[in-house]
Image 1: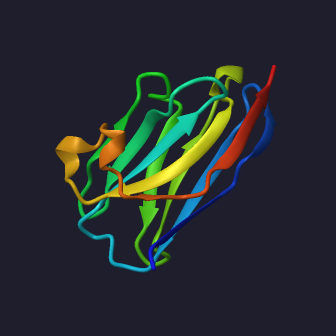
Image 2: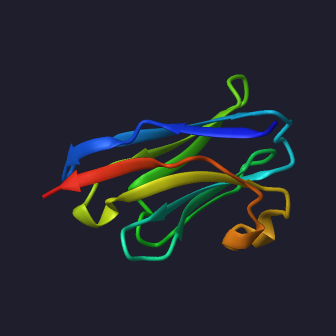
Length: 125
């Protein structure tokens, strides 16, 4: 049974940092693209960042570029989203997800087969 379990969310002041974790289990993800998405109240879920588990490819939404870093730990089968210089507009529920569709499809939400339960990030001004 495939499971993605997020952790690391919380309440932080503007300008602060958080590191989100996503522990993956139940299969080998070496051929998967792992993504982070977020959804604020009343808004659609949006892409934040993606990582190609088997290679070195990473990608970021313009809204977080330069402030966030996605990375992985192959030993722990976990990937991370380090978020710095947080802004109130970063407030959302953050989800990790996995797709086997390939790197070209990393921005297409509906192609992600596996999703975590979400972790809340709240940034106060």
